[in-house]
Image (tube, rainbow, N blue to C red; front, side):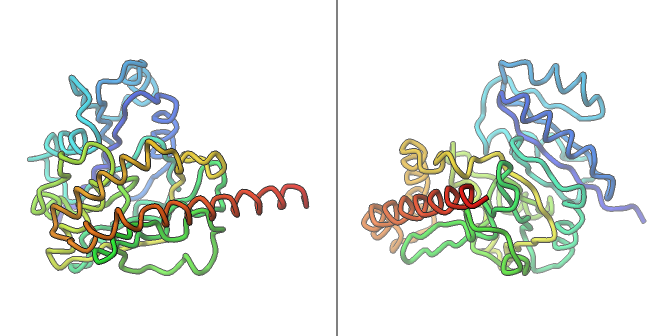
Length: 285
């Protein structure tokens, strides 16, 4: 009987240095075997040539134009059809993976009731601090939030559990399930595609499973405040409203805009407290 076939899809748009670092980390994953496919969203910084030279074993799909996150990943998945792949992992190019990251995700997908498996994700510039340890999605109030963000890693984040949504930073699925739910919805050009995919999977009676035995690191600055960027928050808010409207989450449609100023203020306060604690820690050191 043949072994399971897995593809890891890495989506890139410029950011060649990040892509090369990501592929270098994937090259250190020796077990289980998998195929790496780089799908390039019409980069203009020479990413494709650099990858061909550094990683000739990596398959490359060059897109003629930037299709965005959803469109690019869907195009990559379509290119795999007919090749007998059982599982697929969608991975951001601004990540590096632990050499043992893949097997725990694939083990979760062997469970019939699991539709998506996601790893523990830590900050690359602060490797002991959580960026994602699960996602909370509450349709009644419109709350969409990462569990554990900016908190020190520890035993309380080491328990596998079903969660509300997966982050598109790293998503593992059986190919059959991804096909059945229609892949990523390309109406979400940026943000929201991952939560939408999670809702579709959960509507099929399957779980989104957080598996902390799998670890990756994401290049998001914990100290720069980039997550608090106004433009980014506005795009996320628009994606959230699209998500609520699509899935009939009427409580979210009403309460999300009403509660947004308070949540934004709370998020800013938490960030300021984090910065103060980090500054105190550096002074004490």
